[in-house]
Image 1: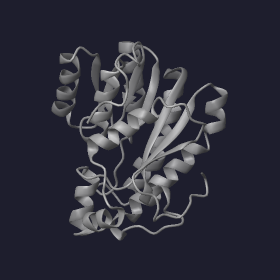
Image 2: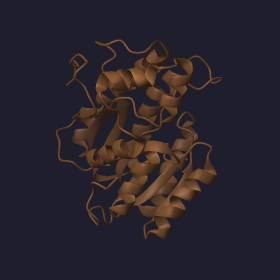
Image 3: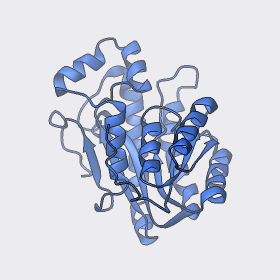
Image 4: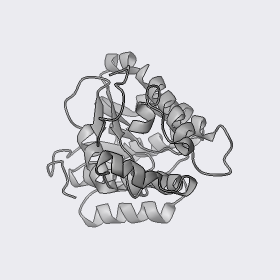
Length: 257
């Protein structure tokens, strides 16, 4: 996939992407680094993967740093931003990509703790560490964004409800973010082929991905979706704008857009 950002367009900027040791986050980090940004690659437990992403960026002439932090551990989130500032300075682009909720053994409330509570804390904790004019990007899915008006697959519903709750909580902060000179946007995508969420969903509900693919005509892959996230990190749009990726024709209009 060709990088949608021009080489050098983010020179001197700093980007932090949560959950970026693999998948969409990793490719987003690469795109931002290729455009010149110094990138903080956040991971929860996959240090070798994060180190590999960093090594690839550095080998290509970029700057990157891998930092461990579990978004549900608020102390480690504070340390994440502190390390980012110490290494590269204030953050110009914050991509809230890390999410989950279909994993087993993490408690019935894990989806809400990660996709709502931790996202809100990640934003609020970031504010003192952001550069003037910083852009915050929240990643979600059509199945979550439209959950109020369009039912989703049974296995995904708890995640969808928690991600919509997280989006709502973040949107409530838009006035104060604007007052501080920061911008907030949402990227909503259809199911993405090759993600861990798609894999877990297919295990829980065999045939779900193919069914959605048949309905939509096509699904984006990881690198294609990451390119859209990178674009959303820099495009000039109004506060609270939702950048839609993939087919939305089968979903009811959102009350917030």
